[in-house]
Image (cartoon, rainbow, N blue to C red; front, side, top):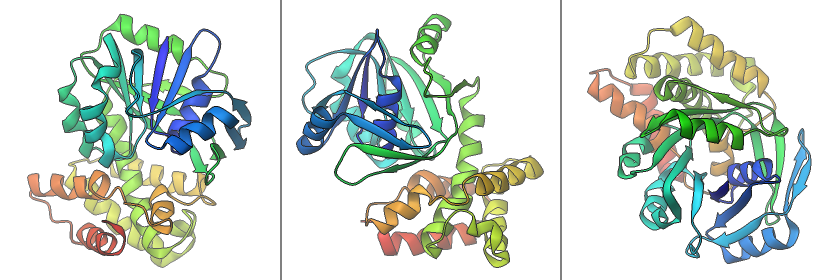
Length: 297
């Protein structure tokens, strides 16, 4: 299977390297010529809790002469629209797309595709080294994948074979909405607070005041998206905080490095859902405006 991975951040580099194996052809697409050259020269290295080094073909995003059976979109949620506008020609007839982003705001854009579409949630703790194409794996988790649209069983069966990897733990889900909402709640509770407070994920359960603030955000988020499994979801949030207690959230890292934050994809989406369900979200609104003022372009 010919696989294109669009996005050479931590997620894209990780997926490209873990999927590269005999019988498959993986190409990673970067928006930077320098980054593509570094990948071609040095390969992709995983360090930390997973270790490997793979040689991967790399191109810049506007060098789309080949066609692929699977296109994995591993960019930030706010770049999905431009990827769809500029990279549709990568797909072979009957190709599949897999979108791996935080949040859910990007889903409305996926209806443009006439191919088979899947969405994924990556639960590994990843940190990209500056300059060199190297990713530190700080936490082991799963890649969860669910069908989104225009999917048939034969296509899914082929993809399951492609995602058989000793380095990557994959779980296939039936319902994309359930899968994404579970991750959305976790992201909403952890990411904005850690970005504002400048703390690790574990601080949110170790410091009573931070834990209370997180519970307030949790209650608003659950009401906004109309979920009632409160006890189960809260226990899941606490478990993730414990399992990733030494990690920094992706929003914390983006804020520290002056990058645009995925606010609209996560808490912006929840605010929008709250309005649709006539649920007020004052604490989430406050987090949005504090982070928007401080870090978003």
